[in-house]
Length: 246
Image 1 (cartoon, rainbow, N blue to C red):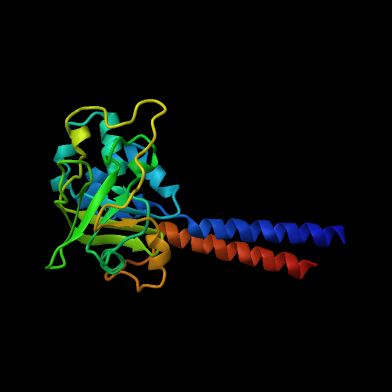
Image 2: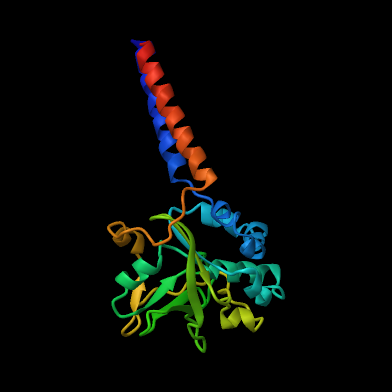
C-alpha cells in the first residue's frame, strides 16, 4: 500500500514538472537564427532583460535589427535597461490581435518598464496606433512623444505566450533621452493605467487572443521548445512505467 502511495506521488511530481516545462520559452532561441538582430539580442542578454522576459507567462518583444540600434549605443547601463524594458509589452500581441482587439485603432499599452514600478509619469507606457492604410506604429506615451516606430514583421511567435516583432526604430522615452531620471523617487507610485479619451487600454489581450487564429508566417517550434516537448514525453513514459510496475 505504501509503495502504491509513493508511486502515485512520484507520478504527480513528474506530470507537474512536465507541465511547467511546456510553459517555458526563450526569446533568445527565437532570435538566435536571425543574424540581423544579433546586436539587440546581445543587449537583451547582457542586461538580463532576456531573463526577465523568459520569466513571464506572456510577453511581446519589439526588436530592432542591427541597422536600427545605433541610438542605444550611447546610453548608460541603467538607461539601456530602461529602454529595453520599454520594448517589452506585458501581453501577447501580433498584427492580427492588434487589429482585432483595438476597435478605436489606438491603445495605451503597459510595458515591462511600467511593471517595474520605476517609471515616472507615462514613461513606462506605449501608444499604439493603426493608420488608415493598416500600418501599425508604437511610440512612448510620455508627453511630447509620438508613435513613429512602425511594425515591420513578426520574427517569431508561440501563441499565445511569446511574440517577437520587428519595429523600425528605437522607442526611447523623452525622460531617458534627455538624460534625466526616468524613475520615480523612492517610495513613489507607478502611474496608474487610466484610460485616455478615445483610446483603448490593453490589460488582457492574451486571454482575448486565445480564440483568434495564429499569426501569419508563424515559425516552427524552436529547438528549446522541442527539447521540453521531448522532456514531457519522457516524463509521461516514466509515469506509465511506474504504474506498470505496481
